Length: 226
Image 1 (cartoon, rainbow, N blue to C red):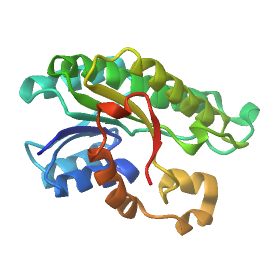
Image 2: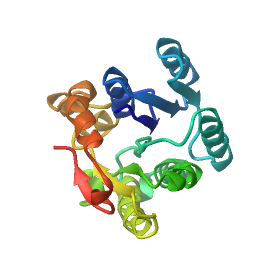
Image 3: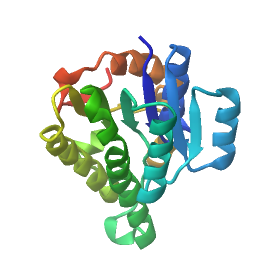
Image 4: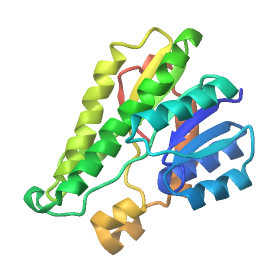
């Protein structure tokens, strides 16, 4: 069975690895990102029914317009993956620039909320659908230097649990910790040590089948890609 899958932050890292993995597995991917050149490249590589668009998920109006276009052109997605995220420069909370804190919270929390609010209503009439909100090990534990990021991912865990109590039967919302993967984000935190962890492509080989097996039974759960 082929699924229609929305992925935010599809231009790099885990989002791009997931997008390519799902496409190779025969599914349709509708992705977004903020880098126009990367989106253009993906759109040329993977034309319709795949769809890649420049969207800043921190802004509710563009997200709603993007969702409306996809739903009207095609239909509601089967799986919605809130992957897009950013991390602050590693520093004590009082030294992190104001704008950086705002950006982390806007993308990681508000962005996830905007995407859910824009797509979930279209999924309800079908009575089925999976919403995956990327959390982190730092959404369930803490470390110094990443307080804004921890705050954003702990918020995702709480948001997910509350939303799970609101969604109708047949729909599941799941907080997913992807694990530790060698991404640009990890390099910010771990430096050269990041190289010792699996690449996004290696990770996607496990993550894609894991996500495809999720069902309404997992509603409200906090899971980790094995």
